[in-house]
Image 1 (spheres, helix red, strand yellow):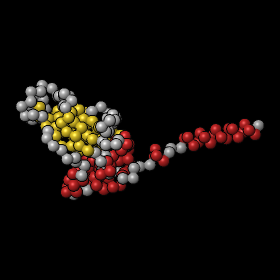
Image 2 (cartoon, helix red, strand yellow):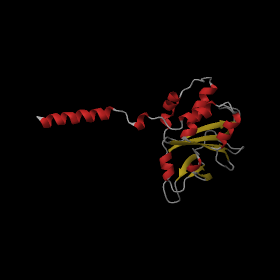
Image 3 (cartoon, one colour):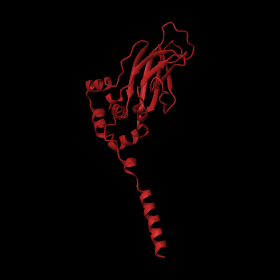
Image 4 (cartoon, helix red, strand yellow):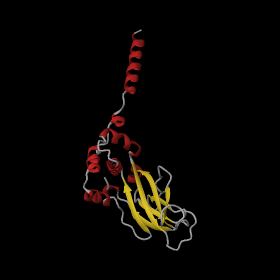
Length: 202
């Protein structure tokens, strides 16, 4: 009888512990307050300097390349709400908005196409992260996004470039021996490669 009661107590205790949310599930990222401060700041020079820090050096035909870390994503989210006049955006709201981006890093690259190109549809350019000379590329968390850039806006004007975007796990990137961001054209020729040093980015 006593052993049965002890078993019941153990089951109830286990159920209670399981029902309690873990610290990891409920805690907000430590950078929330700083992201709110930066995102709310009206100082345009501060934002320009902050953005510059996440740009990668490029060469033609690459027009620009940037990295969006979890922290930078949080700042961008706050900035977007401020630009819409939502000055009361809270730390709780930001904590919820950043959840889908936890542990992820996004790369965005804009590529210039040859001015005399004859493409009638977007070419199959690729964007990926090489993990090293003899290892497989870092697996992306989402399919690569490809957006056309037109000379005069929407379809109907000449296609002058592409915007490529890929999202990867920061943990997988950090584990790569020699990560490089690589852009290839439709025939798999390497157009550009840039070394990635995650330690440089908050």
